[in-house]
Amino acid sequence: IVAAVALSWWARRRRRSIITPTQWTQFDRDGYVVLRPDQVFASPHDDLLSLQQRMDDIMLGTCAEPPPYERMMMQLDSCTGVYADAGEQTLGYKGKTLRYRKIQNLDLDDLVMGLFLRRPCFAEACERVYG
Image (cartoon, rainbow, N blue to C red; front, side, top):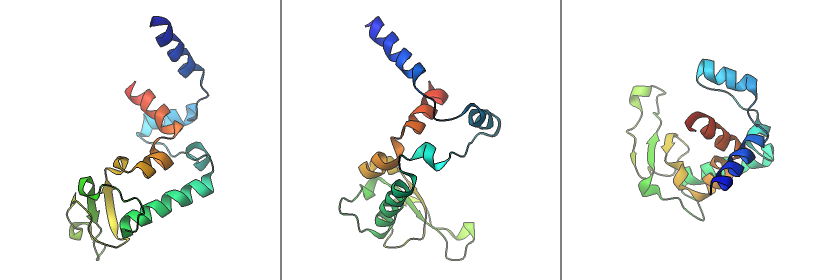
């Protein structure tokens, strides 16, 4: 078991870093970093279009495989553009519109997880930040 753990650790250490040392320096200084599209997506144009389409489908309620809306926190943006006028963030779908200000718990959607959240750059970031 010790050898397997050591081998796993060694494999992670030898893996090519996606996030550059300069970007990590910015992250440490500013608390965020902007990644290039090719650092996030295998095929930046196609993958981003797929993610955008999935988000539109979620907001418009047109998903062939719907996410668990009842477990997702959703908030509509205000019609006035004033933050104080925004709707309350609550569980569940708010209706067919692209005016969503915030959608939380997208990790519950298998397609969003597969298209975006399981990317190596996020695994690298989590490993560095959380250990």
